[in-house]
Image 1 (cartoon, rainbow, N blue to C red):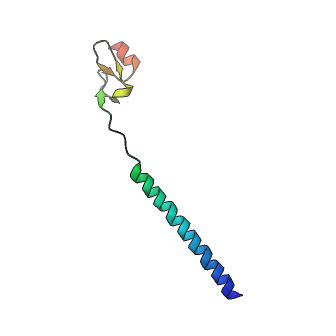
Image 2 (cartoon, helix red, strand yellow; image 1 turned 45 degrees about the vertical axis):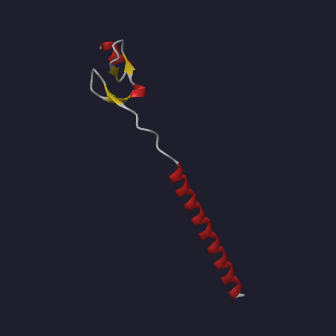
Image 3 (spheres, rainbow, N blue to C red; image 1 turned 135 degrees about the horizontal axis):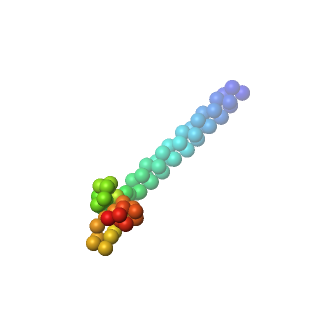
Length: 75
């Protein structure tokens, strides 16, 4: 009876080890395939000097970058 119990414990430990190893490999594979996007250019706000990503800039008529609409309105 004790050998049967030992056998079951060993099998359970091996199954858990295999499952853990497989999940670690899938995380590593996802990390390798997942790529960072290209860096976005930053622009300093004309009014306060805060750096803002180009996609979030507010531009005035002279194409000057601002961090927010209020700074663009104030000039």
